[in-house]
View (cartoon, rainbow, N blue to C red):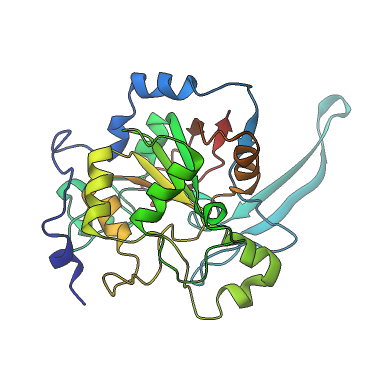
Length: 308
């Protein structure tokens, strides 16, 4: 098993590409032409939201080190002037505990975050690579869903299984969808259904052991050359937890986030969108994501909106 720094030493990176002070990373690829290209995919105006429900009666899928969202009804009823009455509530949640997007300061290795910023600056919050930079910009572009589970003819990709680069290309060919430069890439594993049908005990029976893509030199080069700004899936980690290629855990986080500055989205709800795509065979669409402008934050809860 190689050290992450040694493994990634010769892989492509985007440090300095947009200057020494850049904190947006690959989101710089999403300019006005990319926004307009996303809008051209809209055909019928139907919308889908990709955020998971919070406080779902069936339970919320959260990482083992994180607690489910705490909810408190602060005011059941309070009167105002003229007979108007109000209710008020509050939530306490991990920013990574539901559908969310990672800040570029969320992951690093060898003491350096994206664009070479020192990792010790993370103490007490992120003065560099905070999620509020994503909130200031917003995300709009052409997105492509690769429904790998449907392509393979399974309800969900098996626990811990690798989705190979060849699987991605074959899924795109099966769906007859092009993978163009600066596309937002979404991958459906279907593995969330394992949680809904069997519960968290089954989901975590071997600890966190999710399926997904993982680091290879070929995949790394493709992400770099395709200039992918945003990537996400329907799992907690958006990658194969224990990489069968490198022998390490969550190796794509330091590569995509730290070296390329790609914004990673996790725990998406893709079932309704995938069904609609399969019905009319259109797998590209306009995707919009807004984040909280949480200064210093390592992530933000989101509810992405698809317009088809």
